Image 1 (tube, one colour):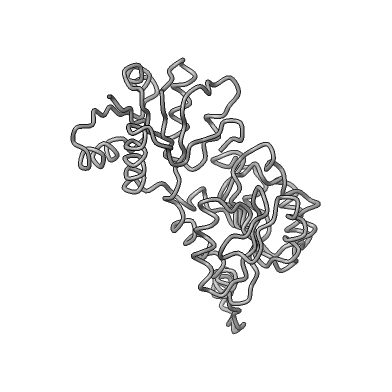
Image 2 (spheres, rainbow, N blue to C red):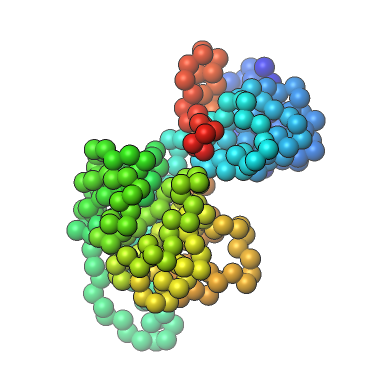
Length: 310
């Protein structure tokens, strides 16, 4: 059975997979035209959605496709086939996303950017820092990644609250509420961390009305999807002091256009969709595990429900 690797780093994936399973027949490329020629003989695909989508639009279709991204939005576009199995990357982003979040929580408490500004101005900055202990963090999106982030943050003494599709007890959160409680919980949080997937229910939820409920001292981190935020409303909320700052990793359009207001927005830091890059060794291990499950007729990890969008 031939496996198509549609990745910019396809040779690295081929190397990792062959080292673990020398019998695998692998074909890879990052060129859409070459991939289309190879796809006809490959019922299983492994790759990044922005390359896989070109194959689907050309009329190619797998039996099963394993995305190397956690998000699979390009593969959900109107007109694309959905009569195949699709799995997204799960279980491999937790620690690296937690490290990203922790970086900016600590930077905020320690006022790193303000101290750099003071240094540039040759002004002594002796302001005493705060601790994360006792701060309240709201993680919006308590799936695989959100739970990993929470477990990573718990030892720092943060009070952890969550938003999920349905309310439920979940360690180490003090409370996990449904999306309808978002307006209540953002008003009680020092940190609001958005990790929601891109679905019709999660688009434009961070708007002017919601930002008005934030604490003026709160930091907003968006490492989920850019479509969750109304860009102009965030810029206005920062300007009007409804929140202290924002760290934005994901945007509606990437790369961000040169004239976009995020570039010069007060209190906003852009991190260029770098929060949780796919690590090929972990991704190869996940794919091999799912391949064994597929061959044994077992449930696949991270299988997508096309109706839900994740």
